[in-house]
Image (tube, rainbow, N blue to C red):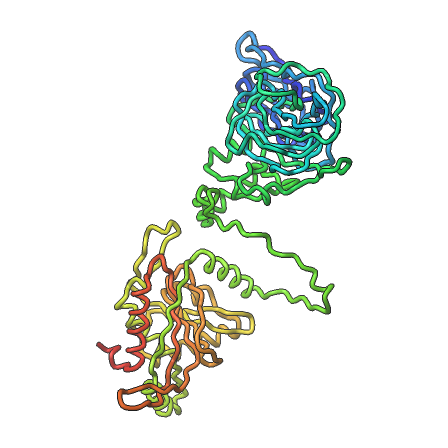
Length: 570
């Protein structure tokens, strides 16, 4: 007959009233030995309370927000079989010590125990790895000091990360770092020398300490092992705590993610395991819980976002962690009012949407801009003549209508400009249709209506459709269908001024044409300078798809067509 047994909190280093931040199982779940039941978060470590035996959870005695101490009952488990399996040890062996005073409350700083007294007076002394709960070959994930730094007793020198806890190795004495014996990536065991410290003044006599296992150096702090017989692939997270040199100053809490970008993200072992199972890189997430801790819901939201189209970030998580991400500094926060009078205006809805798209496109697309000039002397004369002929009909041709028609002809010659690159950057979609977008300036912001099937329309029809779409844009009546499906965009500033500019590619398109104000320029015809009306062209393109030679050919061909529109018929 099965036994009902209590699963209790083991020795957690003398901490009391530690908050429960996660409950990892539910009533009815079958658990195995060492499987995490709840996650606790003290002011020195995040740790799991494991199941001491396998069986079925019959009752949970705690919930998120409760506090537990050593020996507290977590759950009632119906042990498998007639006899319960051998229980995991309830306590981790730790040397007797005096508990260090707790630092001010903060988000899971690294486990740290009080350093032993120095074994001698002033002079160079070794600072070693203390008793760390029987762990061997524990990797160094951070070096917190440098040669020449002044440290005080108990200040963290390095951070170790075992499969169950992240912990600091503190300085045994106050003084100046003369030599560092380790670097990130090294593995250390109890008794290994971390640094040589030139002690400041005479230190008190040594306190009795248990003998260190490796005979590599002197006594050091007893680092409190986190007795969480959890699964070896679950890593307890911690933050970094420094104490300002000089003694007496309170601990200073640093933002570990800002200072050490490669630091293990702030999440419990269960969340880490959950993220690994889903293939989520936690360095790409921002935690929503207290102190920026990543919780299960954050991982789920990230995966949901990726499945709904935000997957580029998730897909590139590994490369970003290796240095491929933008890793930008935070936006500066400035109180402008202290310098003088200000007025705050909220951006309009269209401006907010445009800003987000433009920022993404500029950051994600490697832009190059090709500049050229087109002689439109004859084309402008034709436009003026056609407008006179159609004045009574109320039809007015703009240069932009000719630009759209000419651009379609060039896109047919250079099909890569009429394509889109997928999110993986590995597949190119060549389009057989020609929908041309044009930038329209409205009181509410910039919008890009689309002329559909421009290859099947004449310049008169294109001009009329542009006029109608521009009016809808100014009136705020453009629908989603009016701005979708574009293959290539044109941004014209000809009515305002300027000689050239760099338009931003409108993803997922691969190119955009910028047009500036036309001007009369002297052009050498072989015998003399002739006044010619010149139109500046600025073609920005995605260099992943289009190379410089192709861009130069595109603008040269476009300039040639604008110089003689009869060529469009060829």
